[in-house]
Length: 287
Length: 276
Image (cartoon, rainbow over all chains, first blue to last red; front, side, top):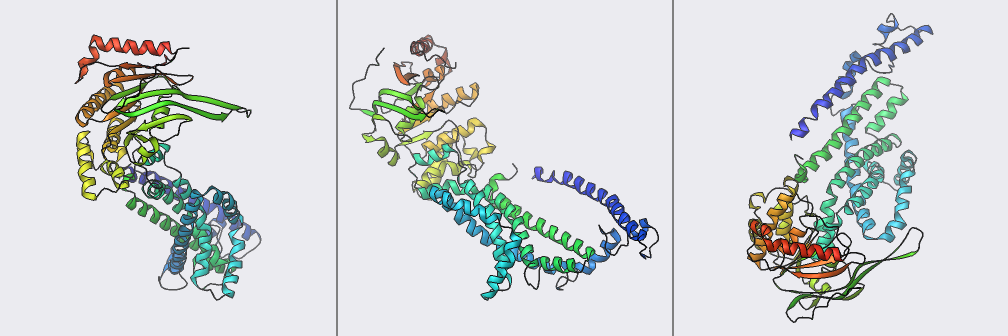
């Protein structure tokens, strides 16, 4: 526990450094943008470039006064379909369901990959190939295919999310199943343990730390899958929909806030995996 | 070439090794076939209740012999029997407990749960598992650490836990493969004393692999001296030091005589690369 709280100080230092960098970067980037606009003779109604840095309609980086104005507008009320939290809820739900489905597929594949060399040789290259197809190219096709068969709502996005989540889980967990020490495997052999007993008493528990590492990677990937799926399909809710709408409207301030919301959602989801990990792996606590 | 005298087979032998050889066939980088003779024509009879040490430098086949007895590997030729069964049948009947070079504890299990592992695999009831684990932990002096995880224990304590695990299902025969090899000299001497006490109290038969001459002399009723290239049994030496043995045993004249005899046999077989 002491080890964990001591992480807070270095993290805080980095956060403060990021904020310290934000101000000069914001002023420098926005002021040069304003300078460019002023030199073209644009009417900015804000005096010189430095003053305009805080009031651009489309800032490179939003100024603090703009953020303070936008946060209440885009984050409240929670139940309004135009706010970030409302849409983040749906994106988060799709991500979690996608991860769950991806975990089921990934665990099944990991069992097959480690129990049969022939299966590994035949299937692993195709699994790798499946991940080299850009998700942005698959998402609309899947959405159209599923839509044509009457599948709508969350499901297409959950499927796309699961499509990229299963892979790190399958690979990570397969590695975990193979992680026991040769001596530990010999030990099970001296007990004349059945393959099922060796799996449940040794291979599976040994894979748990690998499982959670894979879940963290898969969670981040599933979130990307969900957002890409939302922005490339016709959908009524989600951060991906907000991103594409704000992008079409060239609303830089809105895009920034959706982006910040996505980042927070990602951090929350990945930390959720960390919390579950600490609950189910007591032997790693306080280490 | 000197031939090893073959002991006449005895009816009361618990463990019997007859003309056992182990040859590994590999290929060198150029693809040519290579034969490594890990063990050549080994013969050994062990009675119930003995404490046998296999001693020799790396590559003399001592671990190979132990792994053959445990049916973790199978011999190229010859026969092994344990309690009248083949090595495989003995393993399937859970005739022995094996203590490895490393503790090989499962890090997600507490010390108590580690000791209960073989009992779970073998289908003991929960009350029986708990009773035996408690008894074994007391025997190795770890009862206060039952609920700790392995990483919270020192190396010596971890190895004691692995000995408790090997004893938990009460096998008559215990194989130990350099169990104290990774420990410091002081911890090792203490554990040697404890192991002797365990052996006296439980009446087990122990086959113990080591590369330390004092350890072998101190612990054993007989020492099997092995030499490398090819791995073979050079000589079997009786250790007639009186029981119970203690720290003073190590200072007796007879102790040094036997240690010298072991050293001479190792030299004779060109296997004198042994740590003191």
